[in-house]
Image (cartoon, rainbow, N blue to C red; front, side, top):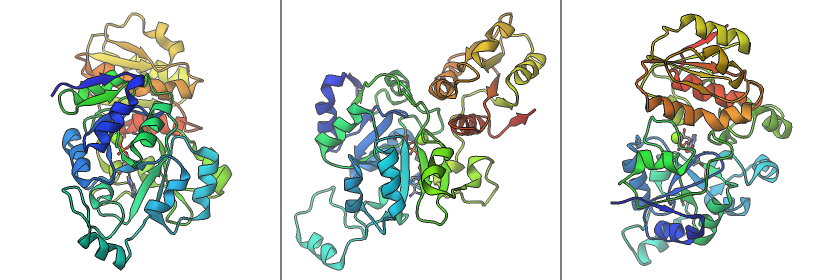
Length: 364
Ligand code: TXA
Ligand code: MG
């Protein structure tokens, strides 16, 4: 199969592929997603195959607006609507209870028309989307092209990040093509992603609400609306053997380039000096540093990439996955990376860098 790159004028074609049970790459403001019709279990199964994704890792559903929540969720707390009002459309995913079918609905299904994609499960959402959990991640994305596709398809779009499982998430159509060439019919090109790291995931089925993955909406912003917010341990440290993070995806090795990464956290000039002192001055060391420190590494033989200015964490978020992918196109044997502090979107950048480093992080 030849993977076609669709232009923004071809959103209708992308929606058509979804409605026909196919897979399509979709731009969102966070990262590119690998979309399928979330109500079609056969189509959704294809996502796991194309990504090489473990079946127990649930997908999130992308919807047009908070008005769609009641079709798929129940026991929706008031906090969900407050968050939606403030941050949707935008980079926030809420974990909510799945809506169950009534006995009468189940009966009607048995007597109604049946096709290969008819799903008879106890919940409105197919089990293949939720991994059999009784909760589901719901997100209302902001990217105008993504929104067009959802509106035209009139279905919730199940979409994980569009990378091969374990690789950095794609923030351009070209990244996604690197991973999905020949595996899916099309990728809709919506330009580079403006956030650059995945959505924030907040679990609203527990009290207090719990941050499962930091992302485009910051912990500080969530606390402004919700008051107390717990932070899942999987955000800041490696899960031990037998420990079960609440977001199943957080347990997998992730975002990892081929060469091992060491992340250095601390005052920017200090972390840059720390890295400089440990370089082998061969082409086997790669460095991802803040822009100000590029001159410090100018004499080095290996690739030196900028993560953006030390004071601009938004830019760091936009550049991180691209930098990790760029390192994979080199033959470096070790990668050193400067890491921002946890304030604002720094928590998301630091979380992704730490995961890329297998939590091999040095705090100065
Ligand atoms: O920004 C994003 O969220 C992107 C774009 C495409 O929308 N999507 C994305 O999907 O990052 P994915 O599948 O790569 O990450 C979703 C994460 C996984 O770690 C998964 O385990 C978790 O969400 N998740 C999904 N459903 C969940 C649930 N019911 N409870 C807890 N975690 C859940
Ligand atoms: Mg992912």
